[in-house]
Image (cartoon, rainbow, N blue to C red):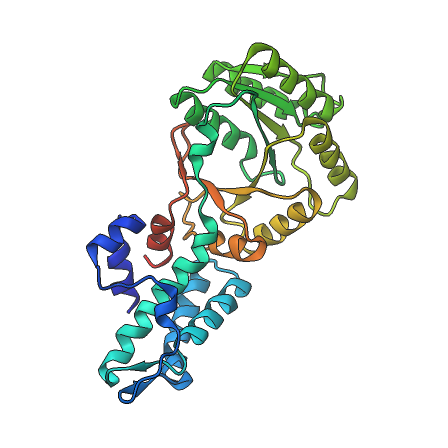
Length: 318
C-alpha cells in the first residue's frame, strides 16, 4: 500500500497529482460517512492493520507520536462507518484516506515564499531563532543567496553578540555574498544591532533585513527575554525558527518553547540531506500549527528550497 502511495507522489506537485490521477479525490468531505442502501461498511477492525503499518512507517521517518495520533484520528473519523460499493473497495478507499489525511496535515505547511519577493515601501524584516548547532547562520546565508538570485538586496545583522565566532562566521558569508553587514563588538546589546540594521536598510532603501540571534537554549529564560527585546526593538515582520531535522522530538520541543516565547511564523528545516526522512515537518506542523518555509538539502549556498509537501511525502514513504 505504501509503495503504491509513494509511487503516486514521486516528483509530483499537488496540481500534478490531480492531473496524474483524477480519480484520487482529495476533497476531505468525500471521506465522511455517507448513507447508502447497500455495499460494505468500513469498520474499525478494517483499519487496525493499516494503522499499525502506517505507524511503523512514520515512526521510522521520525514523525512524533503527537502527529501520529492526529493522523490516526483523522483517518478514523473519515472512514469508520463509510459505506463502499463492496468489500473489494475497502482497501483502495483506505489508501485514498491515508493520502488525504497526510495532505490535510501538510496543508498547514504551506508557506508562499513569494511573499519574501513582493515589492514593499519599507524593508521586510526577518528574525531567525533556534538553538546552537541547527545551522541557523548557514541558513541565513543560503536564504540571502536565494533572495539575491531573485533580485533582492539584503542586510545581514549579527545580533548573536554572545559569541565572537558567530559574528565572524556571518561576516564571512556576507562578504562572499556581497551584501551589507551590520555588527557591534562581541558582548554588545543584540537589540541595538538589530535596530541599527533596520535603520540602515531604511536609509539605503534595502529590501530585506535578516537578523541572526544567539543560539538560545529554549529553557534559558534570560536569553528568551533578550530575544523578546529584539522583537520589541526590531519589530520583525516574520520570525523563522530553524530546526534540525535530525533532532527528532527535541526539535518539536524547541519549536514549542520558541513559539510560546516570541511567536514563530514559519520554520526552516536543516540537514534533510543527512539521512533525514522529513518526519520533522509533520511533527512540528502538528505541534505548533505553523508552516515550513524552506528546507536545507546540502552544503552549498544553492542547497535550500521552498517547502514542497509532495517532496516531503516522497521522502517519508521512500
